[in-house]
Amino acid sequence: MTRALLIGKEPPAELGCGYVAAEPYDAVVIGSLELGQLLRFREPAVLAALAEGKPVYLYTPGLPDGGKNRALGASLAASQRELKNWGVIFTDGGRKRLITAEEARALRSSGQKPGPGAVMTPLAREILEGNP
Image (tube, rainbow, N blue to C red; front, top):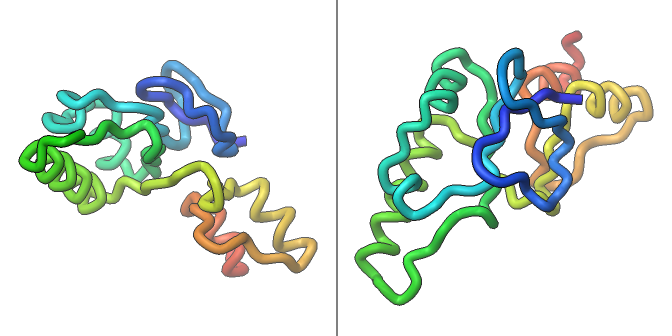
């Protein structure tokens, strides 16, 4: 099971990770963000993980919305685009289930493929492509 550093609240959906509070970890899961956190996103652990090439997943139901304020909603959307540009992977915990290396090996050995919209760790992607 992938060891993931958890930022914010733990997502209610099963993302295929075991959460840890400190290093070592293989990925980062952002379970929730408050308005101010999303607008001024500079979480050091997430930025370090992105710089190291570790996958960072954002649980989208944990994101705030702008409510009835259009300007605030536009700013939040811009912040989300910036995170995507940095390489943060958005997941809703439903159809877009996180496929770990262990699950990828099981899928490959049984000749199956991940479901539509599945989010895969880089190692899982390599395994399913037939590399390791």
